[in-house]
Image 1 (cartoon, one colour):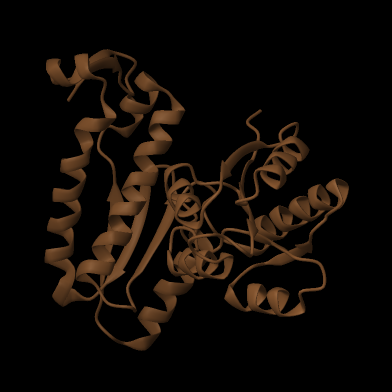
Image 2 (cartoon, rainbow, N blue to C red):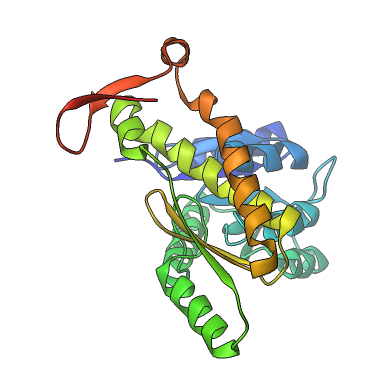
Length: 261
């Protein structure tokens, strides 16, 4: 069973080591000492929760919170803020910036672990979100479609499916498949931010299936950009020998060995 990932962020090496040693038996711990480093690691290796110090040398913890909350892919990521003893303003500012909870340093290791479990449980129970991409799931997709239909405004719906995804997943394994799905989600978000409007919507049905709702006027340009951006990143998901060959060989749905390129 895979451990849940927790990103710990603190510029004090002693605190960072204490956080790591406290959590590493139960969690897969990722460490960062700067705010920008934390943002980079969130995008590269999305954690299930972030333990974030209020005071950092480059970006304040509150700024990191705000930037995370602006990203549709991570806006629901649980964040536990660490503050100095008795710093009431820090607690208030941290919660206002989007932190889900806070703890005062020095902290009790047992309480830290308990609060992490509580935040993850709360996140899982409150969100209709895909656990891999953090995009809205089926309940929210249905609600969005119902609202659009009731509004009587014309709109376009995309059903997005990755060709031959099962073959790649079977050949390289689930970890590679998960990378493809997360990159696809990132492409969809970027395209909507570039070509769409604030009222556009992206949902993740599950597996390699996504839904996008946009305006009829923008639909064709958005579709072309999605295809072009996906084609640009596709080669990096194949090992070099397979890129040179131009295909992989694995069993299709009919159990026959076939070439997929």
